[in-house]
Amino acid sequence: MNFFNAEMRRRGGVDGRVGFVLWAVLFGLITARLAWAVGLVGGTAVALLTVINPLVGLFAALVAGPWGALENIWLGPSLLDSGQLLLLFTLAVWLGRGLAYRRLFIPRTFLNVPLALFVFVSALSLLHAPSFSYGFRELIKWVEITAVMLLVVDLAVPRNPLAVNRLRITDYGLPITDYRLRMTFYVLAILLLAGLSQAIIGIWQFGLRGDGPEHFLVLGRFYRAYGTFEQPNPYAGYMNLTALLAVGAFLGLIATLWQQVASGRWQVASDRPVTLSPLHLVTLSLFTGVTAVLCTLAVLFSWSRGAWLSLALGGAVMLLFWPKKLWQGVTLLLLAGLFFWGGVQVGVVPASVTERITSFSNDLRFGDVRGVDINDANYAVLERLAHWQAALDMARDNIWLGVGFGNYEPAYAQYALINWPYPLGHAHNYYLNTLAETGVLGLAVYAVLWTAVFFQTIRQLRQLDWPLRGMALGLLGAWTAVTVHHLVDKLYVNNVYIHLGVMLGLLQLLEYERRANSTKEGLNQTAVIR
Image (cartoon, one colour):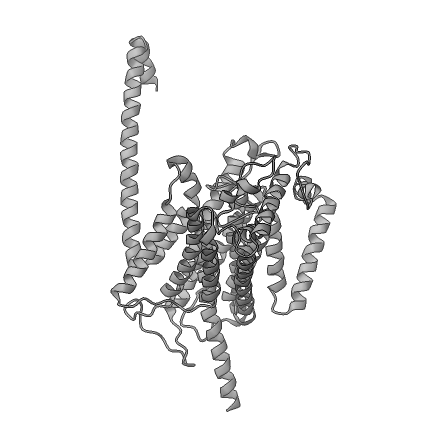
C-alpha cells in the first residue's frame, strides 16, 4: 500500500489510481481463475470418489445442501443448487452401479409403504392444483427423501458380493457383516460432521463476527445465528437434528465405555465381528460430545423460540426413554423439571431467555385476527396467526385433497387477510400447511408416516444395546424436535430433507441390528428349551 501511495503522490494521483485499478482487476482475475481451478479440481475429486463409494457424494450433498439459500442470493434463483446437484449425481451413480451389476434392488424397509402412500396422496392432490410446478418441486423432495433412505440401506446391506468381503456367519447363523456395522457408524459420522459445519458458522455469527443484520440484533451486541440459511428459525430447527442425535450417540458411547471398563471386554458385543478399541470409544465419545455441545450452543444462539421449545421437549423425551425402565425415566424427567424450575427461581436461567419464551404466549390467540392492532411486539405472532387462518380457510374449501401439494403460496392470494397480503411460502405450521395443501387425506397419511417412524424408533430402544441404542435415542429426540418445531414453522426447506433422508436411512440400519438381536435371542431361548 505504501508503494501505491508513493506512486500516486509522485504522478499526481491519477496515474497511480489507474495503475491500482489495473492491478486490482488483474488480481481479481487471477483469484477468480484460481477459485474456478480449485473448484474444478475439488469437484472432479468428489465425483471420482463418489463413483468409487457413493457415501462420499452423499456426505458432500449433506455439507453443501444448507448453502442453497445463500447460493440463491449470490448466484440468483435456480432450480438446482450445489447440494441438489451433488445428490442427483450420487443417486445416478447408485443407479448406475445397480445397472452395471445387472440388478436394481429396492431394500425392504418399515417405511417404504408409508412414504409411498404419502407421495401418492400428495401427487393425487395436484390434479386440480393452481400451479403444477410448485407442487412438483415439493413432491420431488419426498421422492428424494425416500431415495436417500433406500440408498443408505443399500450401501450398508449390499447384495453384490464384489462390493464387500464375503458375509461373516456368526455361531448363531446370522448374516452379520463387519461392513454393515461400520457403515452405520460412518452414516452417523457424516450426519454429525455436516451439522457441525453449520454450528461453527452460527457460533461465529453470534459472538465472534461483531456485526450482522440489524433486525437480528439481540441483547444489545449479539446477532442471532442463522448459518447459511439466512433465517434463524429453520437454521435452528436443522441444528436440533444434529444436536439431539449427537447427545444420544454420546450417551450410548459413554454407556458402552462404562460397561466395558467394568467387564474388561473391549468390543461392541460378544457376537459381533466389529470391535471398538478403547481408543475408538474415547475418540468417538469426544467427537460426539463436542458436536453435541457446539450444536446446542448454535440452537441457543439462534434465539428461536420454536427451536428452544423443540430442543427442550426432544431432550425431555430422551430423558424419559434413556433408562429401559419407564419409572426411572419418569424420575429423571421430574428431576430435570425441578432443576430447571429452580434455576429460573434463583436467576441461573437469564431473564432474557424466559422473557423470550413467554412473550410468544402473551399475543397468542385463536380465532379471527382481522382488526387486531399490529405493533412491533406482536407482529411476528400475528403474522403466523394470519397465515394459520388462511390455511384453515383453504382446507375448509378443499376438505379432502386441499389446494394441491406445495400450492399454499399460489393459492394464498385468494385467502389472504387484508393486513397480510404477502405469502411466506408456507403457513408457519406444517400440520395446517399439509391440511391446506393435501386435505384431510394428506394430513392423515402424514400422521401415519410419522407414527410409523416413532413406533420403529421406540421398538429399537427396547431391544438394542449400547452404543447402537444411543443412536436410536438420539433419533427419537430428533423426531420429537421436528414434530414440535412444525407447530410454528416448516423444516422441509433449504435441502434439510436430504439430512432427514439420511437419518431415516440410519434408522433402517438400526432396524437390521434389532432384527439380528431378536433372532439371536430367539435362537438362544430355543437352545435352552432343548
